[in-house]
Length: 391
Image: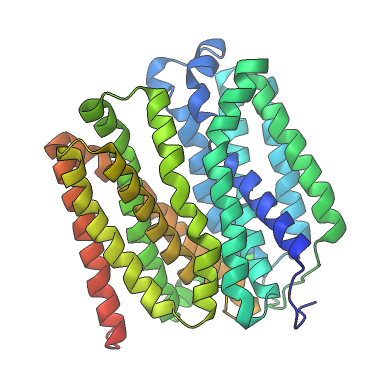
């Protein structure tokens, strides 16, 4: 199945679209809370759960479903998760009560982790010399899905109502499923383990894989800093710049330009520049956080946008560099390695969201920027320990 040439351009594009569309499911409901809540009689204090339930499902799926890639034939696993995602989207579109909608959101989030089966699968198909480029290209699809999800959701809901968003998602998942069923290669795991053994082996696998531990620690800190930034930034933009929600959304879309670095970073990683890219990403993140405090104090929106683009690019650079290393593991442990890596990354993001609220409430943007700078320094210290062979 794996060839010298690796996956075709068409297959890479399809995987990029599929992963982006799957991850987008986590964000469709976020801008629709004001419409969904009253119709389904969801109280104001539970309105935030409309979004968090799907993210909780995704977190569970990262550990318990993605690890199945070492047990279940990958094409069948992906098509199975896509099918259940369609069920979840249809259930959300037709829900008439809060419990049904929450259950649908949990199922959709859980099965959207099919994206994390596709990513290491396409990386495995790629030859070593092209792996970074392929990962970067598919990651560009993931990032595009995240960026466009909320905007597409608002556009569709404004024209046809919020339920149409989930019908559209179901249709998109169906179309992607049909295409994947036709062209996705089969890949039967060779591990010979049952599910209980797969789960029981996770801790031992983590302890025996120093590269996984290091890259998971780096990216968990990166994603914690990223989530902290985007939790506190809307509050700062409203307080210091007087931006409306719409203007904040425009700022976020402009600042997401850092994601465009993904394919370029993959090519550099393929040239053996992994260490340089890692150090550069960490330094950029720390310096950028500190510089945003100056930009806010100077009320310089242009500087803040540029710094946010650099911050986003730093996070994506470290992510793609880490994935290139993680996805080079033996095929029989690929699913579990990715499950561990993504679960820790997701946990870092959750902690960062909490820190964003704590730091901004406790000391304003100055405290948030300082905390981000400290995270960048901590990553550099860990990376230095790696270079010296201490970890």
